[in-house]
Length: 161
Image (cartoon, rainbow, N blue to C red; front, side, top):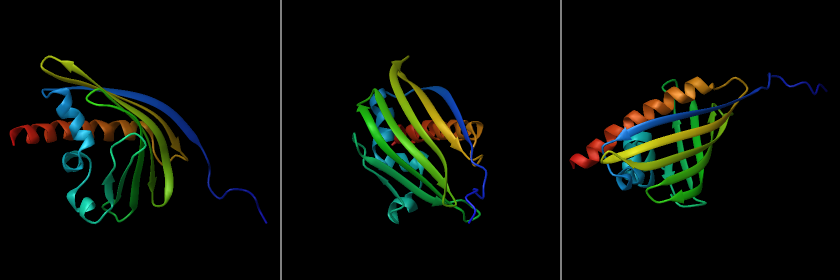
């Protein structure tokens, strides 16, 4: 019996940092991470909440889940655990992602919120390990940039009523 793995194994380590300034108070930006009804506007979809494939237990030690299918039908998972939460100031969490049943990454992330020019400066830092060439740091950074753009739009929608 062969003990040789059938696939190449690799790890790629990377850190990226993204900063945004939103014209909303830190409490409102924080709430967009803490409230599932708001979070689905920028980080999920209402159908996933309804069918149970998206859930949020936003507290230290709590978890978050988003299980979905890509347009081609490939299953994708995001499973997170909250490590440290300081209201309106800091969120530290770890998460892993799978695609097609294969783990593609493991990450620790920090969101820092500070008042700035009548709004909030958000700084997101991610330290990731990307596994077996199935995900790349540049792809994750691009996707996170898009999520933060959607976060801004969701904050504007909530503020508008």
